[in-house]
Length: 173
Image 1 (spheres, one colour):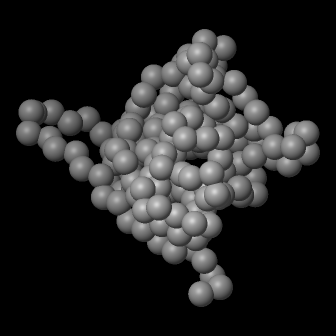
Image 2 (cartoon, rainbow, N blue to C red; image 1 turned 60 degrees about the horizontal axis):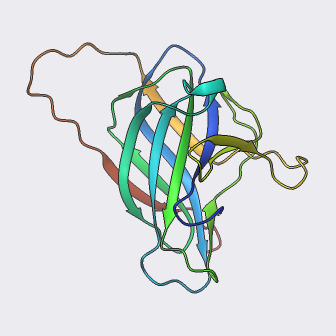
Image 3 (tube, one colour; image 1 turned 135 degrees about the vertical axis):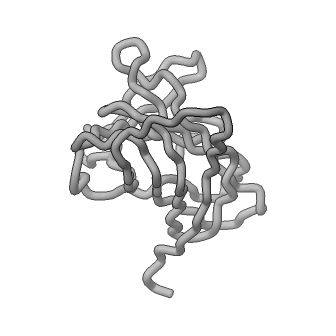
């Protein structure tokens, strides 16, 4: 966890031809003394910024309250068109200094790819890539993407909603 108000996340490369994301889930961790105001916001960004940095905003979740433990947060019924390569990122807020919070690391993706580093937005607004330790530990944050082929929609009466689903991934109880 790089700090309150700092956007950070993982660049991913999708496989296949399906490019309308319907469901996106990721894993968070929260431990220690909490104050009840711990929250995050999820972003999906195209990597169309300078030098391939995260750029255009494709989706913004709104604030999501964090729960204690290892938790899977699922966003469903999104209908967000994405490119082959994108960065998913979060901004966490309300985290006290004694509280541990962050995104959960995972093994390399089963489908698609991730580069083993992560993006973090600097105070000057520019993005940089970072690695854990001295680069010996790959940084692949735990996430799952479900997508369908693009769909043409006509008319003005389309309303898109996102459904948030929480799942406790703590297998110890």
